[in-house]
Length: 428
Image (cartoon, rainbow, N blue to C red):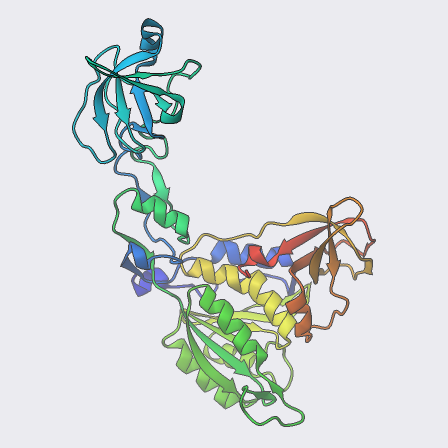
């Protein structure tokens, strides 16, 4: 992919609002994000988890020929009434045999699972339902009645027809996708290379684990949380370290990292306080597009670019950083890396809690599931503490409860929308 095709216009994310609602921010991003990653050809065994950059088209029917689904006996269904189910055996066909075999009328062939059907046969009886006989003039098989025409026969093209798309551009290749591609005979595929992501922590108060603890400072939990989620997306992650609260240092770090990264993600520094210098540095070297978000947690979140490098500045509190990454940054990274835009599925569940909520902002509560002992239905409960610095809530929850902007209260027993973490790429 050439630099020209990767160019992102400086004004392509413009909007006329100071504070965007959740759906408005997502709409801007979904409409204007496009792949920026380069492509490469990889052997199929190395392509798992990668994003396909060219479709895989079936060069032939799959299966390519009619074949047996069981070990048994192949015969022409129309011959059954004439023979009474008593057939002489005239052929033996094993899986992998390549000879063209024509079955004489009023006869049957011994056949094994996966073996090519002989011409003249259209139905297969399972061996355990049949009774073999040997006589002086040959071997015979008694096939029971009651089978349907075409029983136990896999038809050519039953799985995939010639010219059909087996895997689409933008698909993230799973084990089942690799199996489907392998069934076409393709030994390699064209995929997008990993995005180069620089991960920066910000603030004088940040310590890295292993350093001596000092009162007034905190350990950098966000770096390890975000790095793991980025690596699970297949990104090539660079640790840009911790930027102190000095605008010159933040500015130099941003400018240097933008030269050889597709994306820069900063944890902290998203506000416009006196000690939040990332916004100032971003506006010096590039452009800030977004935003203040009408969401909780995560209102102070920034998005911009330096040249062709996109920059996301997440809130410093771990819960807000986690939620904003999953809801906004993750789908952007997947799209930039070549995937289709992904919208997580929501599930309607009964609330096991009651809350009051402020209007005009969307809330995402940490939730966990329990089975109702009375009726066996699944109920969603909220973590009992709402602070955006409480990592315990992330550990003990299994997804996010979504409270729309117009909702001012939820009572126990009402239906609410729940997004499992599995829909956001968090598994296990």
